[in-house]
View 1: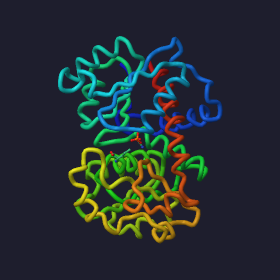
View 2 (view 1 turned 135 degrees about the vertical axis):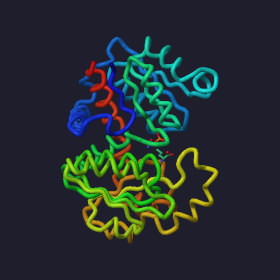
View 3 (view 1 turned 60 degrees about the horizontal axis):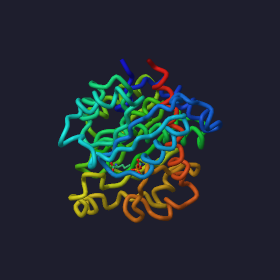
Length: 307
Ligand code: CP
Ligand code: NVA
């Protein structure tokens, strides 16, 4: 049975730490591991648009000695013309791993249930676990470690990034304070799961409506777009609903003076973050974007070694 990475806690906290250690090693010695030598092929499928995920997986697979096969689902049979299960049965006889950016988490679960090779979630409506590996790597690099640190996430707490921050940061021993307007609170099941993990890892989970309260004493401030892919019809309503939740200089000043700012990108200056913060000295978003490469290479190399 192959191991899959469909959500943040599909690995244990110890395995998360192991993958992050491997990421640091691969970042310092970029071409040192060739788990896809052959070369073997890795399928990378996109149902939604992407820049970072597309580039970092394609480059990372090549770095690991493999060949990336990028498939845009609009020009494949996947979805409307052929089931996910049948697609998995065709792919797994030919490729070493399957990476998929899609909508419903159930699609990824169906792919994994029918695949003999690892399936990796490259973003779904529910989770963005590869992004969190990169974010945790960035926090380790900038702050020395994740254990005992506080992250404040401000904005859409009902989206994939909020879910992944809650679970992955709790696994890494962090305290998570999450602030959203009414109607955009985090999923209660995700909060419950994050609290279960935090009870073991030493972290804590706080759900608030005041961004200033979330930011107090934070080591990290993070946000994400207010309008995730698939939510475009709600753009005008969301711009109204999220007023007051922009991460600006005043909010950043409420955190520790040493705090770093994270954003998975793409960012919308003037909406969820001010240009001053995104382009300012506390922002580490470009290192964070680069770390997608190193973190995902570590994940793929680790999964390749699990059989
Ligand atoms: N952060 C992220 O996943 O970016 P892309 O949508 O460009 O892949
Ligand atoms: N929450 C965003 C993340 C983009 C990387 C989205 O799903 O569109």
